[in-house]
Length: 158
Image 1 (tube, rainbow, N blue to C red):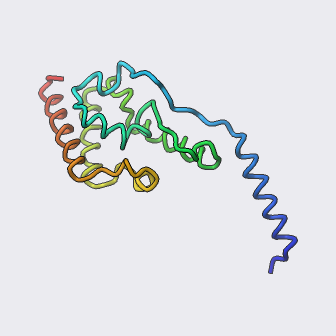
Image 2 (image 1 turned 180 degrees about the horizontal axis):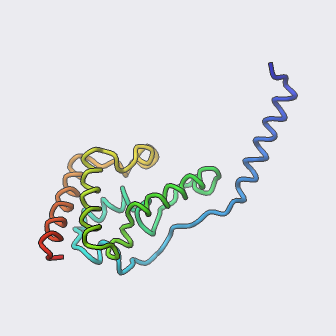
Image 3 (image 1 turned 45 degrees about the vertical axis):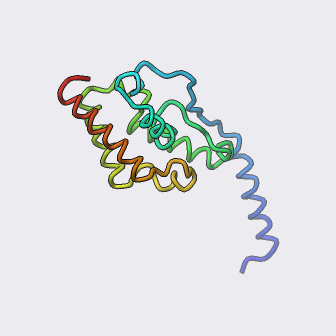
């Protein structure tokens, strides 16, 4: 069994590691301006849909993240930074207009599927961000917009 002296050494070691982790720089995903390639500058996005996307999606899928209070603490900061990088790599609403029409069409399909299956927003995100939990009615609004926009892309009207 571990004696008290060894337990104190382990606790001090962990504390030192946590303090040292605080010095790892963090990337900041914050932009005050909307890019010309933003989805709202390339497609008609109703105000209600835009608000829903901003509250449930934009933190990980845009160039403007609202950071929670714990984002300044390691190791949470590293996890959040990785989460945002992964999210933007998969879909970035701020750069959506720079995607090919085929990719835009497919990303909209993926958004619809993710909402229908309940895989987005991520469960871990919804736990920490209650406002990101979309009601069935809110999901229906976004899904209708997704389908309408996909139809316009398919018809070549957007």
